[in-house]
Image (cartoon, rainbow, N blue to C red; front, side, top):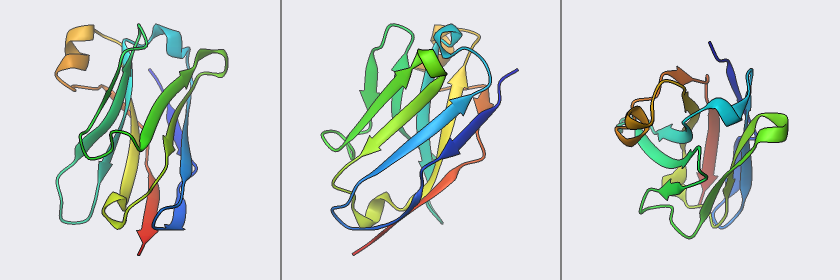
Amino acid sequence: QVQLVESGGGSVQAGGSLRLSCSASRATYEMYCMGWFRQAPGKEHEVVATIRMDATTTYAESVKGRFTISKENANNTLYLQMNGLKPEDTAMYYCAAELRSLSRCYSLNFDWWGQGTQVTVSS
């Protein structure tokens, strides 16, 4: 079992930056992958970025070049550095983790989820 707790959300103006953190209750080096997802009102849940056990990262096209996902195993924390924020980035952001298999990572089928942190970007 894993508990994930996000923090770092808030309100910023367009062009600003935020860094989201996700603290895990167990060792992150044991996780096949971790990721950030988001959901805006009236829109579908979408993947933002993922990081696998071998440190391979993936990004949604809409955030490439602006967001960076990273993981610090020493303190069991996942991060999402968000620069050049746009109003369309406004959403609830969720941290997720997968411990069962790498194939579930490829299919974005994560077992464990945090409660979310709100990001609001004003124009």
